[in-house]
Figure 1 (tube, rainbow, N blue to C red):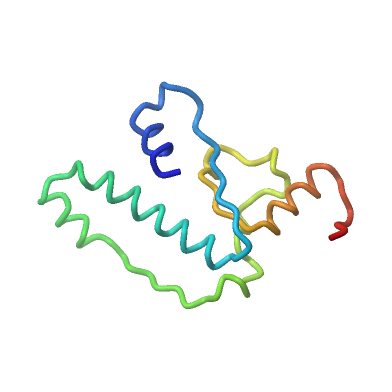
Figure 2 (spheres, rainbow, N blue to C red; figure 1 turned 90 degrees about the vertical axis):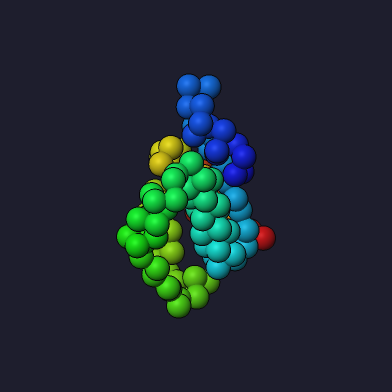
Length: 116
């Protein structure tokens, strides 16, 4: 995912933005993988900066620590639309749970219940 996203950022004229999705059962894992992905992307971008720019960026950076178990957070990913077809390029890459994918499918195809 990282390589595809980075390549697209370096060469945006090569085509539409890739719509990559990371799916897991755990909200916590999805959140952690997304955070790591964002840090890795930022480190790739930071590799192009001078030491002075990096020093300035370090002073401006805020370090927010969140102590919420995302598996218990009812508002987790409330920024997403109800239907998969309503997602925009800004939502990608997308890090979500299997349950959220299932909700997308239910909404997209007007399925009222799921039989496991």
